[in-house]
Amino acid sequence: MNMQAMLKQAQNLQRDMLKAQEQINNMSFTGSNGLVKITMKGNRVVEKVEIQKDDSFSSDDLEMLEDMILVATNDALKSIEKVTEEKMGKYTKGIPGLF
Image: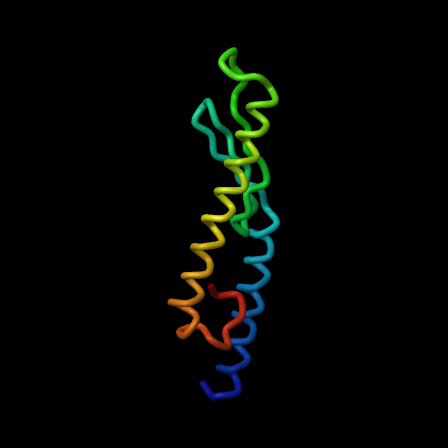
């Protein structure tokens, strides 16, 4: 296989990977344990936190707790992304869409 064909194949692979990553980023995923349900986009941004209502908490308290969990979770995920970029970025420079 000549170099030109290899470069074209690599470009096609990169385009396909970016397209697949975009599709994943736009999907929503839900995790639940019965009491708490979290909805997150494929790009790892938490969209919604829901806590099952019960007589122990008022609705306002639950909404505030849900918001606090959402913000804290997204903050932790941003920290993970930052460290991942710092540690892995040197290996992926010039390859968009990776880390």
